[in-house]
Structures are given as C-alpha cells and as structure tokens.
Length: 311
Image 1 (cartoon, rainbow, N blue to C red):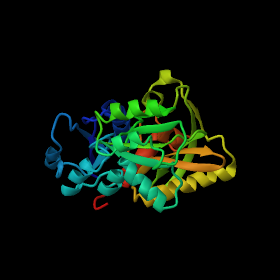
Image 2: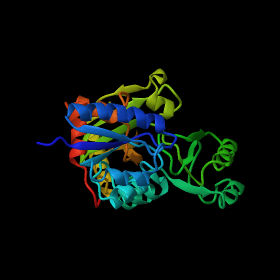
Image 3: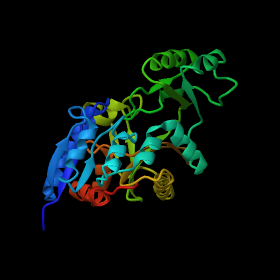
Image 4: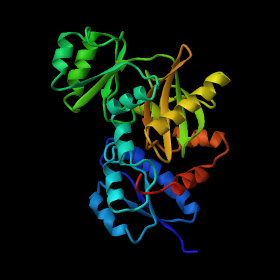
C-alpha cells in the first residue's frame, strides 16, 4: 500500500505561534510513527494560497495552527476551496467558536448555561462606561473582560471594581475591536475533551496563578495542578461529559474539541469551546486521553481518520 502524505500546517502569525509549533512538533512525531510521510507548511513563511501546490501531493492536511487564522475559519476556507481533506472543525464552526459572542448566543439557544455578558466595541463602550454598566447589565464584581476573538486566555483581565474595569476596557480596545465583559464565576475549573462527538473525560485545574492564563496553560514553572479525573461526584462527572458533547454538537464541531467549564453550587457554566486544543506535552487533551488508555499516537490517528471536506 502506498504511503500516505500529510501536510501539517503549523506556526502562523497569531499570538499563539509558539504553542502551534510545539503542538505540531508532537503531532509530526506521532504521524511519522504512524508511517505517514509528513510535509510542513508555515503560513508565516508562505501565503495560504500556496497550499494549492500540495493538492496532488498530499492525502490530507493536519491543522496544527492555533489562534487567529488557524481557528477562526480563515485557513479552513482555503482547505475547502482547494478541496483537500483536513482535520478538526470546518469554516463556520471554527469561526463561531473563536467568536465568544456568537458562541454564547449558540450556548444560550442550546440551553447551555454560560455567564451573563455584554459585548463592547469602540462605538458603544463610552455609553456603558458612563452608565457604569448599571442599567444594562446584571452582574456583580469581580468581572472578566477579554477580547471576543482571542485564544489561550490572551488579553483576559479580572476586574474587582468599576475603576479597574474602565482601565482594562480602554487598554484592550487599543488592540481589539470587540470585547466581552462577563460575570466572573468562581468554583472548580473543569475541562472536557471530546473526540468525534464522544467525550473522553474531564480534568480539573488548580492554577497557582490568579486564573488559568496563558502562562498557566503552557509553562511548567506556573505549577498548575492537574487532577485527572476531576474531583467531582460521579453524577456531576457524567453530567459535564454530556454537556461537552452537547456543546460540540451545537457548534457542529468535528474531530477534537475541549470545552471549558466552571462548577459552582452544582451548576456547570460553559465558558468556551476550543476547536484547536493544544497538543503539546503539557496539553490537556492528550493528558485526558492517556488516562482513559489512549496513547498520543492513537489520539492523532483518530484526528487524522476524521479528516474531510464539506464540513
């Protein structure tokens, strides 16, 4: 049988380039163990339109990008246009998951509990600041303010009072068009991996830092405690697996996703769904898979086997 060739798309120009390269390195190693021939492509070095030249050379694309372009539907639109089967979610699912405002609308429509929020932009923010959010928004401090379309907790700030919120909003709007302000939910941080529509397991995170930010996610020095399986009762454990599957389905995702929840007073709040979860040696999806007896190589094989077009 002829050896299959995989084009691993990696790196890119987003703020998560380093994570993407680390994920790609681990996945490339697994793909080679699976006897695939691997070619790499970095959109930071070649324009995405150049993918066309690989159409007859590769059997599929393994999308190892993170952040903007890689998980917002941009790169997926090139894969679809060139009709090359690719891993992970399609154009619309990726775009919706990356945009936290659209995600929340879908969560609410699907009866998935999510923190109250408001969308801010450079046009409406002055009105909300003037009113101190009092009339339009039902929340208590602390609140979370973050860009509506960033990943890996980049740009996320927790504000304990109106003054802190005002400073954060003005600062973030210099770099981002739209922000989301939402209730800060205390409680246990639970994350669930789903592959091909089926939940693998739920892990609990106890960051030593203020919250599970970029450093807590990707740096060993941050000393985030991972508890696998999550330290919650059996009913809640099964319930959160079902909620993650429901979120995956509601967003029409494909391949692997990771859903982030907070558990407080026996209620799970869905914060977001990630369509391009990290695949580094510190990443949660491989850790969850390992616990349920799935090797990293087997995990990569499942992702590859789901590659398709017309998603």
